[in-house]
Length: 337
Ligand code: UT7
Figure 1: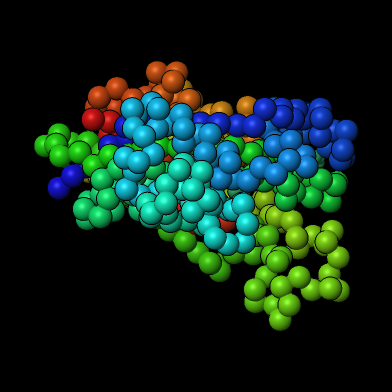
Figure 2 (figure 1 turned 90 degrees about the horizontal axis):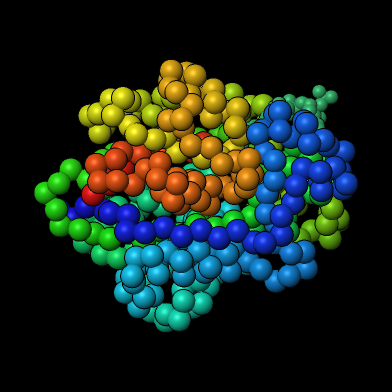
């Protein structure tokens, strides 16, 4: 059976740098609060009033990943696009990206799993490769949060966290006897906690999708989050799911060279390290630079970790993990060929 091998990565963030001090000017917050509670120092947002969707950011990241793989878009036989901020209600951003890549028949699938979009996406890519349905896959995680945030003090707990960005992976099915590729994947979801992090409107479940009696600054048009509840859930569930994925792969934590967690809050990831009794250098952090880019956060971190030489040599083992809206959470273990 073929193994799913990461051939290359690429990432892109828009050029508009927003520091914590910039946010102090538009809502009641402080650089000190944001750094202390989240570890975030800055994030990138698209230029306001520019027509930039998540497929545009994904396109930039994809061009880099394709060039790094030595592939052209025509080589692809499947596209997976993970986002919670699609360009439009439908069709999905995967189709929009496919057209931007100059393609007109390559299948494209959108994944709406928010912070675990990359975990669900890589698992899906692996299943397509192992079943023989696809051989060369482009997996993209991309978000434009900034055009949908409540940029008033009312929304400050969420608004200071999110950043825009994208990353892409070229994944190839390779025939090899070597122990490599996705060693295990464990995914979970609990829809009973959907309300803990959601954007409720527009809603197809309402008789009228844009109700005339609800003004456009209603909080339901913006992401709302029960931050402390999600924080506690993440600290409790991530060690458990990591253990499940280690058992499934039949390896120990000592054999993991680097953990790349979803970048939701530096304190969550530090707590995870303490719980697992890991040296901090075994956990990758870059939330300080980009904030929480949701579906893009783990692949952006992977791209940077590989560029920095922290991971990527033959035989290196990386563990990806995260928890977010849905709720959804999971842990994947990947070994480089
Ligand atoms: O990626 C998706 C998954 N999401 C997560 O994993 C996020 C998990 N949760 C978190 O990261 C944290 O809960 C937050 C960073 C969102 C919030 O941090 P917290 O330490 O849990 O703060 P809190 O919500 O308990 O609020 C503490 C105080 C409140 O004021 P009072 O009631 O104590 O007077 C908030 O109003 O901090 C206030 N506050 C702020 N103050 C300044 C909330 N947001 C801000 C802000 N600036 N941006």
